[in-house]
Image (tube, rainbow, N blue to C red; front, side):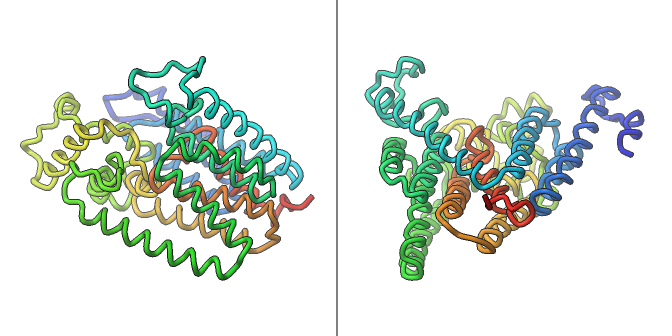
Length: 389
């Protein structure tokens, strides 16, 4: 029915092409809703609802229609539908191929990048080659990929391979890479030692969380760098202050990358006709903090916290969907066979959930595909027997 509405779609905004472009955008919305319905049927209803929310937010809320972001998202989701049709032995074979790819990356990191003799990538002057990044553009972006490969090898009892895959982690040397690696190790100990490991690790987690929370809450100025956070804690503070202004619908899908720079740069605001002197004292305080953050840590195109960014872009319903998806994964994982293969999928998914606290790993290719495929494999098994031979 929506296709027959297309001739009547137009925009009243004078800042955009009013007749042709809105029809193309509406067609993308229709395709996204159709894709969401298929995902709801073949994977799970919660993921389908989250996908529908993204396309609706992009069309009705986002200040700039994010065509490129939607294209990448659609391709990723289509790959998820492909995974939903696979059997257990297909996914096992896929994990082995993934490990071989990761081994090649680890070898490149340790034998070429670490010694500083990388012949392919041109190193920027002053770049610390000791923090390896392979072909991911940044060491923190290589981290979640590396950890996921370790999880796959470790739980499938390929111990020597797991050790080789883990070697670059200590030269990536990034806090949230260590966190995701700790999640994998914690799950491995729980898998081996059961309840005793749960109690011991829970105690360690509570103490660590309390220490970090105290450090974050006590930070009064964005100029202070607590726990070597590279500006993350200050960024989260400013992001939350902006996000809570629109807690119901947010600022729209993919809006952060377009909007946040305006908060950091006065010249961008002036070019868009915004006079800072007319803003409220609270808004001026946010602008001051954002500008100081730029001086200390540079421009930001991501909130470096996937859960906070969903609050910024979708309002409260964004984090709610995140929690529901994690809950759905865990309940689906618990409701069935839990051999080494299933533990590996769980470790991959939860390691990315941990990394996403301080990174934007779900926005990356191919990194973000790994937790998506793990989610699909686990939640689809009841309908398609995906984890059965």
